[in-house]
Length: 317
View 1 (tube, one colour):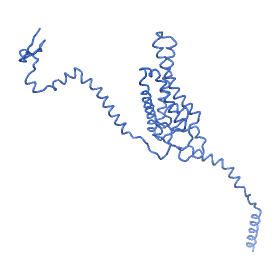
View 2: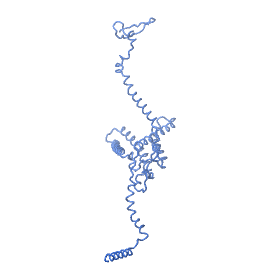
View 3: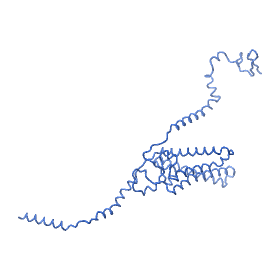
View 4: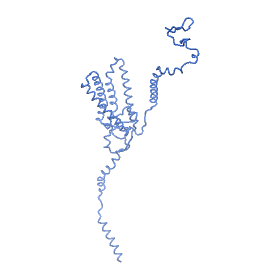
């Protein structure tokens, strides 16, 4: 009897508690989502923006080399246009010509958001690395905007204008240093400062090269300062360069350099004397040398041939 009373009392208490629970509002899950969504994004987005991508260092170096070769080919064709002009006239404006060609390449490639000829062949493009920290959705790690207008302008100023100004300063102060005999003049001090700046730049470039070989980012100091990183333009595109002709050219260049090194050595008198015993003809050795004296076997002072018998005669003065 007591057990039945206890069970009825417990069931009545549980039913009363169930009736007292207030159900949640319909928009409660919406408020909970809005409250937890920033925390969820803070955990998810850093892992998405830090996708590690590896760009081939060989592709980046080859792209720079191909750009240099393209500029040299354009310069060669432009020099042929002015071949009928006064000799030596174009040499005076060689720095301006190089700057003009570099500006043309920049204008029709980087300025219009297109890769340079070398980058296009290596399937590379420039990406603004500073803007990658604020991006949301990242799938392959190759996404990202191109360079901004300010980055493009500064790239042109550093590569085209900086190289032109540096070349002109070097030629100007080198000429003034040679013309001025005073070692304490302003020209010599300016030349000393330029050499120091060049030394620091080379040291910084060497340090950047070591960092580039380790991380694979930023080939030179200009790209590192601007945050312009080279990434693949298409993730499924192979390299479009065949090195067959280049390998053949390298082989012939090395072979020609080896010949240029060995031929002067072989033509020297010491080498001729060394190989002279091996170069004599056996048949001629048995007949004897017509220029030697038949009695003392010495070399005569004035040898000549008598006519019409063609006998060798010698006159020793």
